[in-house]
Length: 190
Image (cartoon, rainbow, N blue to C red):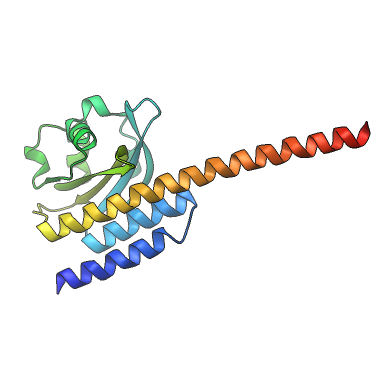
């Protein structure tokens, strides 16, 4: 029964992610649907900076402003994210207080985060960011939940990259249109 529910949820998420090329809409859909379907407290999406050294907050749900503003998220200081990004592997942490690979453990504890699912976001075999899903209680994520979340993250990575490429293309088209209009005005005045 759970497998059927997750399959139907995946179809719904895929349909919603493919319905938009707006980056903000894609991020919001990916995050909110993931949090809802896995019944977790909160979630965040962080995308890699240009040099791949930092993770920048792109979307968040259910987390306090103080937790989100805890400081710069450096990949080198986050072994969990580093491993997930390098190996492109999903990491399920049942008890966060027992984990030593956190950059801000005290802040996570104050936020009431007990378990976390760390999912790499990849596009064309390249890591572009991380989707994190947070549970307020100790939780052992099941194999079907992990498989579902991994599939959603894989689809989400491609949707994010498509939205980014669409935005870059739109900017380029606008610049070319402006340039050609300038030439037409120049030639008309000549």
